Structures are given as C-alpha cells and as structure tokens.
Figure (cartoon, rainbow, N blue to C red):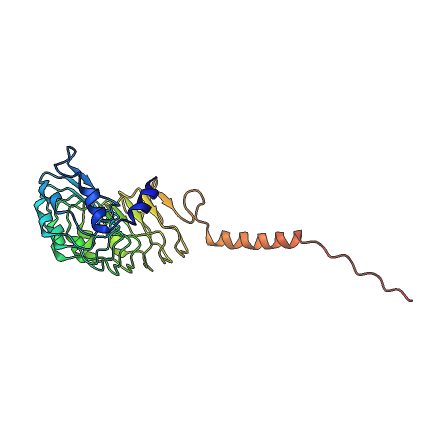
Length: 279
C-alpha cells in the first residue's frame, strides 16, 4: 500500500503534494514529534517552526537541499533526521540547535562539515554514512560527548589523530570506505566497544588485545592475511573468526600439501596400455 501511495503522489505537483501532506499540522503534536519522512518535500514547511517545544523532527527521504533560518527557533530539538535528501552542504542553521543529541545526515551529497558543528556539544550520535567524504572532517573530533559515529560508505582513506580526543566514543562504523591500513588512531582508544571496518582494503590487522573495552570487531570483506588478535570474550566477525580459528601458516601449508596428495591418490588410475600384437 505504501508503494502505491508513493506512486500516486509522484504524479501530484510538488506544491500541491506538500500542502496535502502538512495541512494537518496546525498545532503542536502531543508527543512533541513531527515525522515528514517520505513526503516528497522540496522545501521545509515554515509553520513547523512555530512548534517551539518540538523534540523530534524527521525529514528523511525527501528532496530537501536547504533549510530556512527560522528552524533555529526549535531550540528544544534533540533529534533531527535529514538523511536521504539532496544536501550538498549542511545548512548553518542546524549548528544553532544546541540541544541536539542525535543527527542523521546519511545518504546526502556532503563533501565536508562546517566548523560550526562544534557548537553541538550535546551531540551523542552522528550519522554521516553514504556521502562524498574523502576524509573525516576534523570538526567531528571536537564533539566531546559523541558516543556513536556512523561514517561508512564514504571514500575515507585514513582517520585524523585528533579522533582520540573523543573519550566518550564507544562505537565507530567505517564499513565500505577505502582504508588500506587499520586506522592507527583506533589503537590508542581503549574505550571503544565496537569497531566496524568491513568492506575496506585492509591487508594486515595489528593486535587489538590491549583495547580493554572492546566487545565486537567486524573486519569481513577485507583482503587480509590475518585476523585481528583480541582479548578473551571479544567477538570477531570475519575470516578466521571464532567459528573458524585463524590457522597457523605452517599447518595451512601442510594441509594444502596433504590435500593435493589426497586428490592425486583419488584420481582414477588409467588402464594399462594394451599389449602389442603381431598382425
């Protein structure tokens, strides 16, 4: 049914569609939440800015590429979802919402983040996955209370050393980037609990056994020659994980030789040649 409605909405002129979607928003919702996700919006409905007590605002999956300065009136906002839109730059007004705890910016066209993002000192969770980032913006390292960072599906090749400042960071998702080496800065962050470097180009993993808070490391889909060594009780997801322990190289070579010999022994023996007879 949802897909059918979306198909019908696609034929409605954008202005008419927007008026239809937001026409019932005349007063502050009791749950202090407005969800306009998937509403085909091309511009933000200004009258939402009159809901000064609003705590959650979801604008995911629209066609937005800008936000009005009036959004800054929503100073109680704690969750803002702008993912799956057309933002090429983060609107400055977002950086004035100082109570934000969770900010979703994934699946846009962002190449960088403004330095003013550092004003969001209450931010705990930041989603910037599936953008056009070739390096992690250094301003992220100034978000002192950040606990979760989703930065997968970009084009990151390394991480800044300043990331170690984020002593509240517990989870970092870096899958689907262009890392060729395990980020060295992560080795100096013993407070990390989850590290995800799936789908990169890492060939060698250093030991992570000294990361005392680590609970999970995901390293699958890398052309690695080894698995990261971890402390007892830490779960690994990838080649040579708990289910299939990392083999000793010498044993692996011996196994390969034995297997080849076995295959040769199992090969059908050709019949002896027929004796020559005099005709």
